[in-house]
Amino acid sequence: MSEARMNKFKNKGRDTETMRRRRTEENVQLRKARKDDQLQKRRNISEMEEPLSPLQEKNSAYSPITMTPEEIMEGLMSMDEKIQLQATQACRKILSRERNPPIDLMIQCGVVPKCVEFLSKTENSVLQFEACWALTNIASGTSEQTMAVVQAGALEKLVLLLGSPYLNVAEQAVWALGNIAGDGATNRDLVLNCNVMPALLKLIKPDTSISLLRNTVWAISNLCRNKNPPPEFIRVRECLPTLAQLLYSPDKDVLADTCWALSYLTDGSNEKIQAVIDTGLVPRLVQLLSSEEATVLTPSLRAVGNIVTGTDQQTDMVLAADVLVHLVKLLQHSRINIVKEAAWTVSNVTAGNSDQIQKVIDAGIMEPLLNVLSTGDFKSQKEAAWAVTNYTSGGTVHQIAYLVQLGVLRPLCALFNSKDTKTVTVALDGITNILMAAEKLGQAENVAIMIEACGGLDSLENLQNHENERVYEKALALIDRFFSEDGDENVPNNENSDGEISFNVENTGATNGFSF
Image (cartoon, rainbow, N blue to C red; front, side):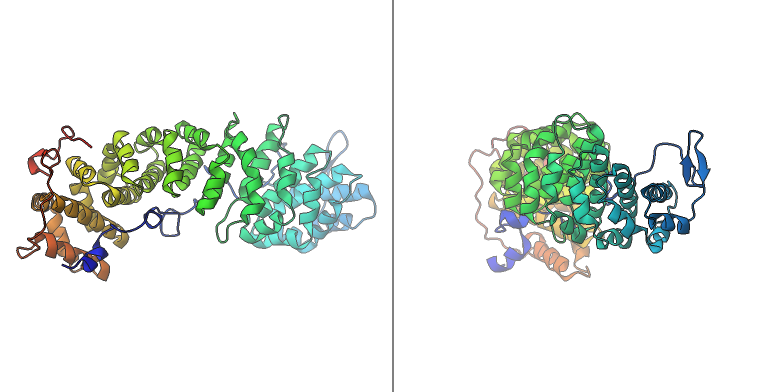
């Protein structure tokens, strides 16, 4: 078989950039907002027990005054600031209901432009605060509801309020801007274009209250979020030194949102990854992989995994921080998603050079990785398959021999029966690479026998009827070259004279007696 044809069926020759896998729609998607993850938008629900209706309390006995939406709007239009405040507060309270707030009704009544107008009432901080709170909850809704706030001209005024001498006003403005930025790339960029980042960073001081700090870091993370397109890096990179400091926060919520922000900033080009590395935060980020808080562990692993999609040199920075020690444990984590992310991270390390692969071996990662390949859930198995195939592509013949000794063939061949075409393709590439390495040692026949013994040949023959042409071609090439009697018999035997590396069938469980 010609070399040109064989190049179609193996990973050899692919550069690291091709093999290291960034996050795509088909691969590992950015997680959706869930209760146990960072939310894109947050409503400000009053912690005080307030009646849902009537809406307004007055005097020491808090006797309620009923205000209909029409009366609220009439109050907002009043020239009397006391009445304006009463109506704005009533509007805020109805929007702060925990269940089914009538956001659309309030928008239709015309409250948004009036609340935006009240943001400029610098002489009345209470009115500013109530108006800002109402806008925060309107912006927590659908994209259309958020856009109503943006189109009413709220952005510039909210950014100005970040500098308010009244911290409750400033914090509420942070919250509103965070909701707008969390709506998507378009509104995120509109907020960034208002030069919001410097104003947010000024709020982060040693004496900042924990509530304000949490909201500010969450808002910053939303400004770093979303990929299509990503934020203009020059507008967000200035937060990196602050994020590096916040990684030492004792507060788990601050830590979680800091790590999410870093995961977004590292999900991109090597230049962006380098900017993050240059802050010196990698050792601390890796250290957080030992966190027992899933809300911190998940985004820190995501960020670390993104960094190792970079160059070999960037990956070496993470390896130097002892990331492999953590990955051994994370591959055995009780949370399925953590196992999947850990396997994905390993796949990007094994996509590197043979020295990096050797570090993976020395750290004892391949044993738990093969356990994931054998018994993990399908998504984790898929990532483990990538890790193994990348290993077989960049590893030395000796390293590949060691992988066979660990028992990789059976679980890798089992994936030939997967319903996912991409996974089948990855498994085929891995087996091809292993057989070609064995061929260099004159051991291809022994490995072929091992593959046949674990049912791999039967599965390969079945793949000749696969609906995907690429799968069919790869399976046919394997059978023609390694399993047919008239296969290529004139391959040179490059077996080492020391005899230490062998694909011997009887020795498939051995892990000793190999020098690397």
